[in-house]
View 1 (tube, helix red, strand yellow):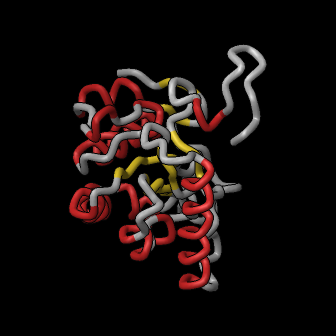
View 2 (cartoon, helix red, strand yellow; view 1 turned 30 degrees about the horizontal axis):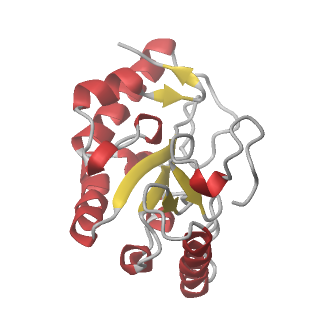
Length: 190
């Protein structure tokens, strides 16, 4: 965080106009073999990041998600004072429903945390979502409808996608979420 941007002579730790948040680690809970140890580790790393921000509150500290919803939003994250943002990843279709997502949004709001949908995806093929490398390709119409359906579920659960940001803790409207969904690096609009 002490790295100095050569274009403006400011260190990263003093550049909130460019940096929304620092993440602890991408998918630290992948595998989730030692959840207590890893949750504690996330909080300690977040504390170290906060310490290097020297009291700045305009640059947030975020988790880096997990492979699925449950591994992304571990219970201890919601009570870790050093974490501002819980980033969730959802690659199982059961994770991409309003019913699955809404409890996490409510828990984040109650604990004073922000919650963002950092990554999500689904199979290109007609195979079960957890085994996607082969199968018969879904039709373009089916894939487009799935994207719309799951993006709408994310919006209905009041979770903003990370590309939109979340100024002053407000969630974007469903209309804005639907127009701004990014899927595998491509903007999708309808």
